[in-house]
Image 1 (spheres, one colour):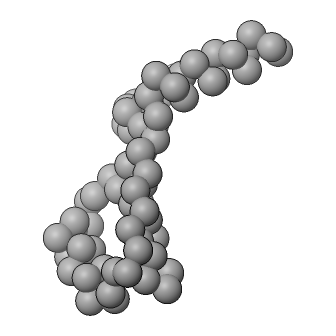
Image 2 (image 1 turned 135 degrees about the vertical axis):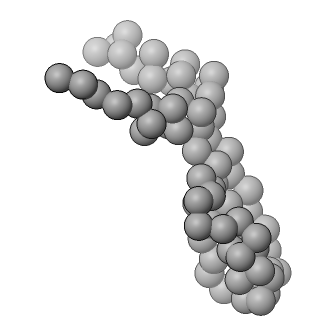
Length: 71
């Protein structure tokens, strides 16, 4: 199991999820951002008490969700 943990850590370092946090964001700015991003954005956006957090999934995460498994 030690090798599996090492591999997981290496993958996370090679392709990290990006995260940005902004403070003093108004509700109006948050709503405008959501409109600009549209319905098909891959970003995850969270807002609470003027703090905006934007998460961009790693490339590995995005590519694995689009793969089709055929049996």
